[in-house]
Image 1: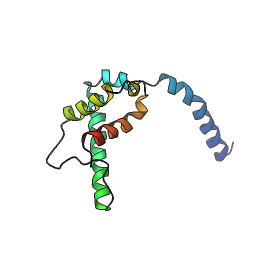
Image 2: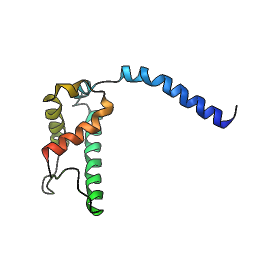
Image 3: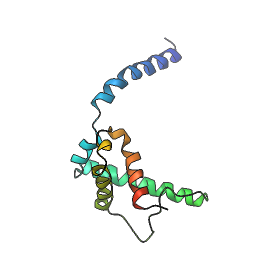
Length: 116
């Protein structure tokens, strides 16, 4: 079997597995229930720092920032989690989203907390 055929077969097998994975995906509600676990705290913290780096890059490129957290307002992991938790708690429709949507919800929460 050629490399190309193997690649196509691999992609097709991946597509067939996607619906099963989506059905088994934990929800945002599940993630929030586990928010005190070290793994979830690490993911929230890393994602928040990634958004900060994106903002820094946008600033250097002269583009509008995603959100405008004052430089004098550092955020601890607990503060990041509180912002996300409040956002999710106040929006029940988010709680049923799969955790794949977590980065979008974190961004939305930060934009709402620190508008430009």
